[in-house]
Length: 51
Image (tube, rainbow, N blue to C red; front, side):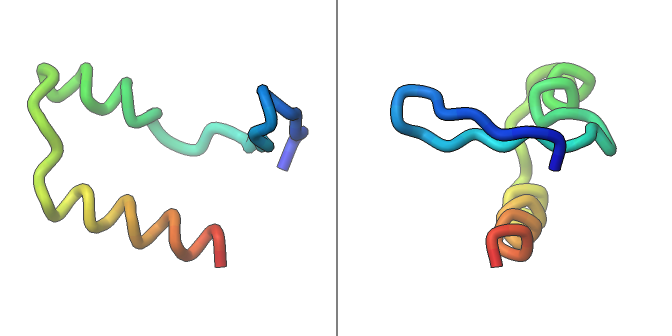
């Protein structure tokens, strides 16, 4: 964790960039929607981080 800040009552945390952002990934994929497998994988990663 590099830093944190409050944005209109929401705590935001900044981390080092390890891979493409979700927007950059979407852009490289010609803005096609994520597959259910990709969404599931991202959701699992988020749950692990929050845990």
